[in-house]
Image (spheres, rainbow, N blue to C red):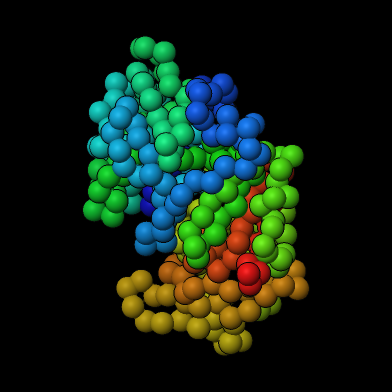
Length: 304
């Protein structure tokens, strides 16, 4: 789990107070497009393992990160977007030491994703399901970072992610089968619960069960106990490369009988065994997400 994700999990209980799910929408919104067409495409780009979509907040252009581990509809970056804010609803520190103070966002005149309008707020009123903090320290990675698109927004529709070419499709429940076209199922993952903000299922690596957390906002990580690490290396189920951090390539990561591919993941030695499956795995598949039903369908693209 990244320092930022640990921070979000730590402030979740405080900051979720008053946070609403998707409500009404403005003309030209994603919901309008879904009602009219059934499927809407959001152009995306992949940068250092993060899924980004162009947007605007109060007319300021930039990029959002799609993050299924963020518990708010939108979590805006006050370092790029000047915003009036309401009461503080949570605070903490990033792993690198930066203080994070979370506020309600006020006077959100407009918010767009790929040119499609999302909820504005009435003048002086809290924006529905929107929080704000200063994420200036992320701007070396994404100079025009507007903030995060979080799980409540993503859960309002079924969506698919493809990485080559980069594409995100959104569908309402009645049109979800259209997202399966051009691909074949590898495995259907049914989430067993939530671990902090992230959904999880049980995977296997060698003789070991791993809690596998799914996260669109994270390339991925691997945490093992010292004993498990030694057992997996000895069994040939883990190939590790020296460095800072140490990275390890799982050999034969399984969901049920199905073996899955992933890129090497940074390793930490910790109190339990878990793997965060982010873009290091997702980039190898077409993934179709239904967060309301608690599933992600991992699929192979078919040749044209």
